[in-house]
Length: 487
Ligand code: AMP
Ligand code: MG
Image 1: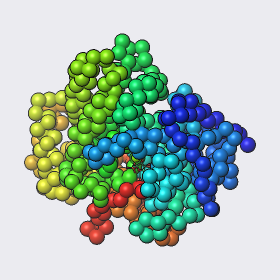
Image 2: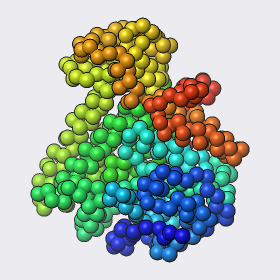
Image 3: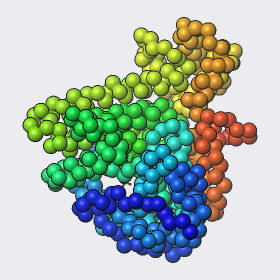
Image 4: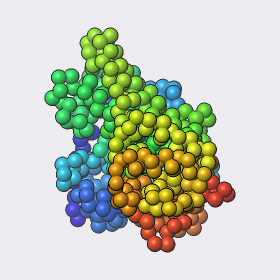
């Protein structure tokens, strides 16, 4: 049996950064799925992970020698209100591993029982949200969007009380780190300057080692996080992804999507779409995501102020200048992405108006976000020989689009369509399919739709024979209006 190559890098930070957590063994742990490819990439022994000892670890029941699980402490703004003391209420950090390319990854269990930060929660996760996070995070990865990954899903054999009694489960997830904006807020709000500096140095070494040599490393770090988040949110907006709970404790300084709760991909395009049941005011609506990201980054900048300059006014000026870059980076990435989605190679005056016109039209027609772009990625549509139902009613905009394409020169429609199909997915984890997948698993112990969704979304741009129904938006009776938190 190969020992796990875990390092305990975070545990080397001072004790006030985390709490060691006693294990709460699962009564009957069973592996639902192991991500073999990811295990291999991380240099973990997949066979061992699938063995009874491996599953015991993945369920948080017993740990191999040398693995001392910990829960990280953090604070955060939740729906705009500051909570000075949060922390991993149901997560255990097992350690970190280095892959063949030298990149470091942390392995964390989510849902394995109470921790000193559980507050009133039970520290558990239930099967549905675990399967949803597994599929959605792996789908995001396949779409090329920075994200935490899913290493394994395990059933605990325990029943957990939510609105009803539900099967308990644990997700093993992998991230380049689990440091959040809220982790910085924790130390800043306690005026623990030494802690703040240690955390910043740790995050720099892990995520942005190049800035350690910069003349002002902490400012450069802030700039890097701002750029990473601006790029990330642009990627979300380009696939119609709604995170659902963009609290500052759910925003990673690595720029990876983290903490999948009531998240969803939009079907019908509506900029004001909100899925999260608890988001009554639409704070985290689709179109608000860039604004909220900047709001969260402003909280990060505030937390970092003491490290930016000894002079507070100067720190504020520097932070303000860094935050001002967000809009330009976001729009640069977003418009570049839209151009690629529309098969455009050049930047032209009037592009923004042209993009807006498309979204206006989509909104009016309640067009499906994903299928609109996929339908455009067809040589017959590009040449004007075919009008699929999805695009019916868009003729005036399509005429403009073809004109715009013609201005770009003589690329063969088939070639253009091929390029567009590489950025416009046909398979996304649609909400009604996630719902059906969860119901089948919870009610019938049937994981076939889970497996199908994983297989299709792993190659999101490649249509597969006989799978057309997985590209379809929900029927009216299948529509999911709200999603609930993973709690
Ligand atoms: P979230 O918005 O789901 O990321 O969670 C916000 C905070 O609540 C984090 O500190 C979580 O660790 C904590 N939390 C969420 N669910 C539970 C639970 N079932 N038991 C204990 N703590 C939880
Ligand atoms: Mg969270």
